[in-house]
Amino acid sequence: MLIVEDDLELRRVVAYALMDEGISCAETANGQEALETLCQYTAEGKRPDCVVLDIVMEGGVDGWQVLESIRSNPLWADLPVVLLTGKATLPAEVARAERLRAKHLAKTARFVDELIKTLKELLARGET
Image (cartoon, helix red, strand yellow):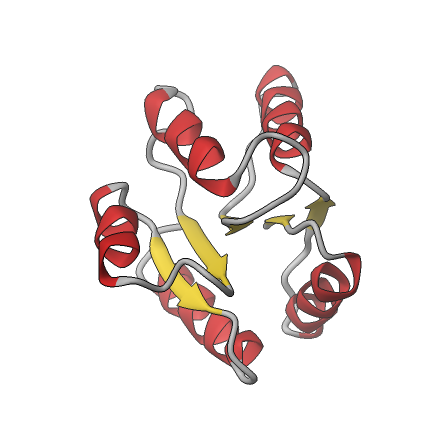
């Protein structure tokens, strides 16, 4: 998994929870780092099983831009993406995520449990 989250504490909570489930993770702190990491993986002939992506991030490249870059690149277009958000929970945002073929999870008190459940479902269906 590639975890893209600008909040270090939250990124670590997610990474540790996934590692506790036996899921290895790479972490990036912003959208630009995520795109660079995906390019590096591609150059090495690798790719993550899934991208866990925050929508609202500091640093110029937000999660929507990363998701649109993933979907527009033929090498990454089918890569499963789970969006995490604390702010973009309006129906239009959920519909946008669906249109871009991404799962959408709100950062609620129990979102880590929901994220693990979602990732296990994706793995079971062979979508990662």
